[in-house]
View 1: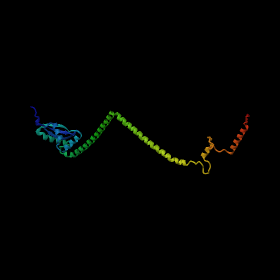
View 2 (view 1 turned 180 degrees about the vertical axis):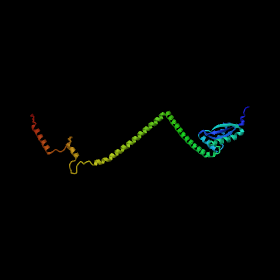
View 3 (view 1 turned 60 degrees about the vertical axis):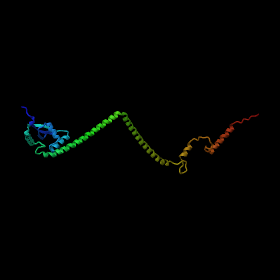
View 4 (view 1 turned 120 degrees about the vertical axis):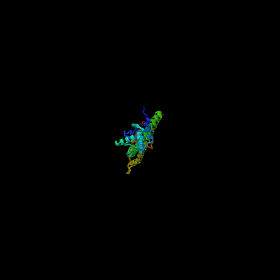
Length: 248
């Protein structure tokens, strides 16, 4: 005689996928998959809500495992028996006698996991944005190489102009400093004539130069000895020159 499955139910446990511990024991007459979905959508108590929230923050779901199949009339009895047995073994059940002690722990766990997930989401988002931006820049450069070269050329020319302006300003400052120092140097040079009335170095130099010119006014005056010598030479030339007389 076939068994009527509608007359049987299942005592099940919900297992935490993070540590493999049993967190909840219940009973149902529906398929276990539907019962798990109902737990996720409508938690039975605050402890269950915190626990499901912590798993959801990690992208996880609890595992539902059957413990036994029993007639429907014995479901409640066997469920309570399993709860007492697991609690005695030290299981932290959300529907056991001490489940309220686990609520603060689960609440803190949910908050911590939510913060970690938010931080990780921000990091991943930033990394993704950086990668996308990098790819976009690379694609832009690949598509328009001449623009990239033009930008590089402009940068080089700009750097050269800036360096040239800097060099010009420095040179101008050096020249200005030199011009300020020159008047002081010229003031220290000796005058053409000394204070004692003696000829200076300039007049002495002029006297050493050979005289070049044809104008008599520009020639220096000859001394008495030089004039006497010239007169004697002229007389000697006149005496030596014979006089030729022509008789007609």
